[in-house]
Image (cartoon, rainbow, N blue to C red; front, side, top):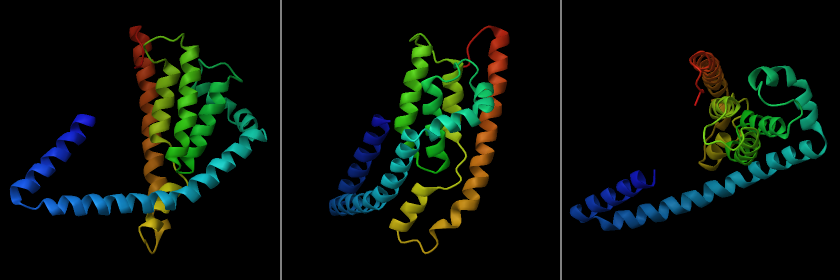
Length: 198
């Protein structure tokens, strides 16, 4: 990715120099930096609110309660993770943040979940089935409240920032269904062949 971004940057600068329009690069960089700060400041409130809520839920034991409630589903999705293992709690936190549309808030929970699953994996270089399933769920998780996108739309001056909720729910539901189905089919296929899913 770094090489691709460097290529875009250098090619843009090269075209601007050839056209004698170097001032456009400076203006674009300054406007981009200004917009980045505005969007970041707009997101701080939403992120702080939901991260705080997640932390309160974790400390109050609601995550353990949610883990108990979702245990039948989690056992089916992650049969190799023992019940009550910390990885399940981190997976639930990650999926909860994703359901609320807080991708950046979900990232730390996802990293902790992967670390716990890697310990169960015996620190092998290949990903376990549970890790592959989690990756599929994390990248395609259903989003009921796209809070980050709504905050970005608000920061950009949208007059109807919540009008994307319906299409987001529909698109992410389809995406997650396809991801879970593909994971299940690939798992069965590779088990028959004696290999691993990823």
